[in-house]
Length: 69
Image 1 (cartoon, rainbow, N blue to C red):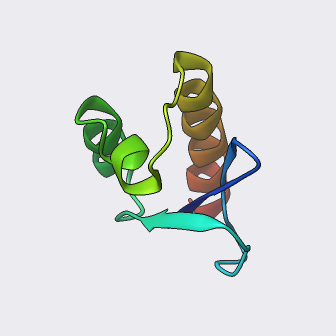
Image 2 (cartoon, one colour):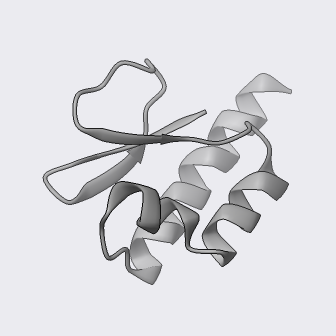
């Protein structure tokens, strides 16, 4: 799955083509948690992400995973 950032707003890029800086991770909740714990997303996007940013990403990913089940 692709995570994108535009104007300091971080979101899951479901279209996989949003403009702005992006990061790819394996589409699983365990990989998302690992990327968050290691601060890999913030590092690859060259942004300082807040806990609120990570919470939004987790919520968006959980909704995406629920739709795919």
